[in-house]
Length: 398
Image (cartoon, rainbow, N blue to C red; front, side, top):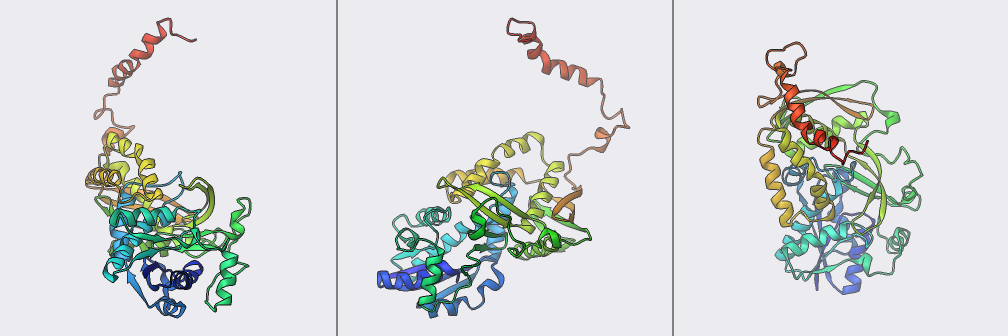
């Protein structure tokens, strides 16, 4: 039997490689998707082989991740339950797709992931896998093995000389990519406990935020960011640039309790510096370039779209259909937005576009020629007609 394991080098997947090899008497091939984990990937291939994998593919998918997943999602202004910018969610369909492609190329019998039976990622990985290979065998160790939690895994790793970074003192589950890093577990499982300052990677703690504000200009073409401060950058490079700019100002750190797709509530701390800047800037540019009714219609679908991403339905026909409409809505969302980063906040301070629908002459309080204020009287009376009819009828309540 040959199994391709989605490998990260963390606690769970480090144990999984050895467990799958022993439990299924299988050849294990590791696949590690570089979606922006940075130094976390140092030595990951060697570690997988030492742990029992016959080989391990480590592939740089950062440009594809930013271009084909992060940016289309940002065009939709997707945000789950008002706070979560879907950093972990949006990486899973890309990883799952490539996992299946490698399984095909290697003639594997099954794929394996390290998502728990309580979480969302099991759903995201498996929905993606089935969208490409309807009959693929999927091994999900957290739904099979005897271990009850990460403390058991830490002990198993110690017994088998598997090097891991998690400890009993800091048993956090961390997931990092170009868009964000998440922290779950340990002290964070009690929603009343304040997240310690040392649980910080992509943003400085607010207590250590810079005392000097910084202005940043982001340029967009059809809703896609293309430049930062006038410098043209590739999608992945642009995300890294914005992450670096947001970090010293503590931008993008949120502490939330979300509703998982499987039904439970979960507390997590997320750092999304570049994504937060992009979200604010993109909305600001839309405010001057999008027609009101187009914007309101698109906004009415944001929660639905966000649910699709969160729940793992990236490759579902309804998401693809909605994405086409979103792409159409962005055809004039081109221009520049200036933001000021300071003490955990991203403040929009300016926006401009050659496609702007904003007419200063009409909006001005000083000009009565471009807009006849008397026209408002008839407009109001027409809109009030049904209200006046009700007030004159027996339906009147007061």
